[in-house]
Image 1: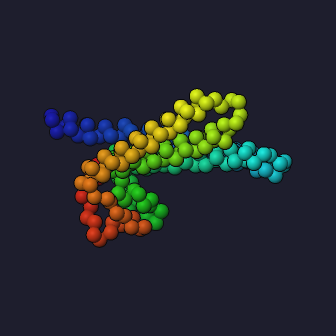
Image 2 (image 1 turned 30 degrees about the vertical axis):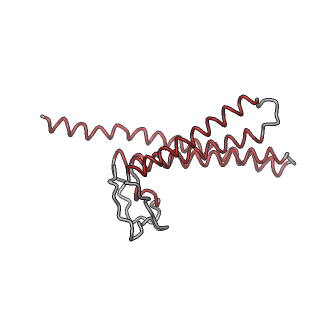
Image 3 (image 1 turned 90 degrees about the vertical axis):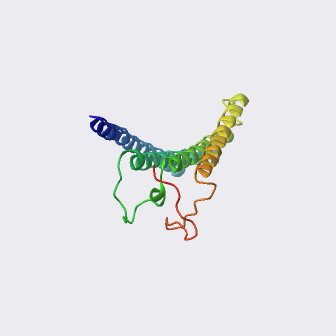
Length: 189
């Protein structure tokens, strides 16, 4: 009986699969949003002479969509691989480098860094619009503090990951292989 309960618990990881499929749908929505904004930029850029700040804000919006899309990919692929099932893509030429050494801690740090990038884009958009009356000093201060909170949180996650790894950095070569002098000591979660 205990073995069956354990097996049912192990099978329960598949409950998360629809969540990752839903994130793929969200990815499609972001691609659609990117294309609509790109078409708007092209019409604006070639149809008239918009102010440089307007073009810059639209381009930053496009970069923001790409960064959020990258975040979605990390969560979809990394989360599925870590918590649901192996993807079985070893040796595939398009396999992401980071996937070969992903675990829950690495995924958290990568997600935190992506969130900092997204927050940086939003903060830059606020700074560009700072001269407009719609942006208050209070809003500017709060968004800066929130961004700094993301930075401190990411640093704390990276520090915790390093401590859990025994204080040794995990050197990885450009091809996703660990250098010969570094032996892997972390187990994949």
